[in-house]
Image (cartoon, rainbow, N blue to C red):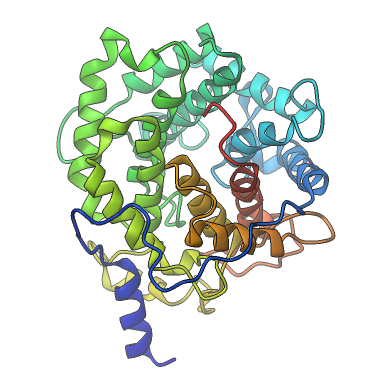
Length: 390
């Protein structure tokens, strides 16, 4: 494909078509397939996630102060969200040992919030500030979703939310959001990832049990968060908009129904012929792109071409979000997406494929599996349905 053709393909993937009043389910001419098979291997998926979580906790590069470890967006957060979805099917009476270690780690950092160093940076530098903002949201989300399984918000989760609200920005175009890490790594730590982080904050509030969202003391902060997400929505890549749709299923007042419908239908229009979605076609936007970063629309840092085929992260996240939006499993788009996930679980170690937008690494290396860690977690969430309380 020449540069002009690639250029056009990216524009087509990234421009949001605003269409109010369209139906929530847009099946187009795609015929429905047979009922999605349940023949995916939950045991090997759990083993893969547990093995990767165990490796991360022991990896020296993830080690932080006071005997804690860094919470990553690619391995740790997806694990925290997805591992519980396997518990019932595997007849596990309690969280897995690695789930317990993760929760203990997050709780410890929340309790020592004023003592522990941030994940990155020192002093009052930008990286330090961004790291604090990022961690505050991840801590609140992990503890809130865990507490949702028990139906009661713990004191530690409340403290995590207090830490989060204290770091919310109050001025400028970014007011309502949080400082967020930017390592030029799409889709979670890049120039547009602040919106992703704010959407996660909304998911955390919406998932928290005990009507936390109605707490009087957070209403102004919530209003500011909603304002930020509303102002920035149309500037976002489609994959960021997927996370916003997910958040809106927990906090319906986030966006108007017709806006959510429009975003869903734009995402559905990017489904590939094989039933999956490709992250590389969803994670970019022209707005604010510099001449240098423009090159990343087609290549990774090593000048290697982006992987354009369907992947487990985009397909799993989108399918899970569509389920949260209450599309029936008989919907043609959702059914085909779930069927893609069933077909594409690795028959060996149980993972789903994911491809980095930033680096070409060996898929057999530990760092080369980061995208597959996230892909596997979201595939598990999608295939497990909507039974979880978050």
